[in-house]
Amino acid sequence: MTRNALMIPTALRGRTAGRFATLLALACALPVAWVDSREIPASAMLPAYRQECAGCHMAYPPGMLPASSWSRMMQGLDQHYGTDASLDAAMVRQISTWLAAHAGTYKRVREAPPQDRITQSAWFERKHRDVEPGVWKRAAVGSRANCMACHTRADQGDFDDDRVRIPK
Image (cartoon, rainbow, N blue to C red; front, side, top):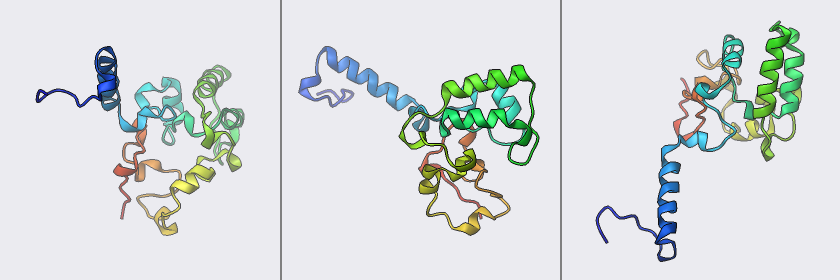
């Protein structure tokens, strides 16, 4: 076997080996967190969503909530978690349509969390169960909704556990 040859099982040699090698190369080229379609990097987000929502907080990947949660949120922008985040009707329609099309549909987000809060979803609670309550109160963190405090590439759709850095 040559030095640069892939270690491909005998059953996969020939035409299948080429497909296997192509798939392997593609899988290695994709950012780890984006392989899972529920996470979308900011560069792939609807510009209106990025502009309007990220003006106040991180533009959360739409796959973090089911469509029903996004729909309720967009219908209640005048009381968006204690803030008036109202938009004109055309902008609401545009963003709502995009959120519905990219909302989470997989098992962990089928059920809407209490108050449609990502931070109160069962999967969020499970993923953060080992975070001490005092961490959320640190000045550099501020709240459970500040993903960027620990997931420094969250705005790029990267929530990889290996890159978590909890501020002191």
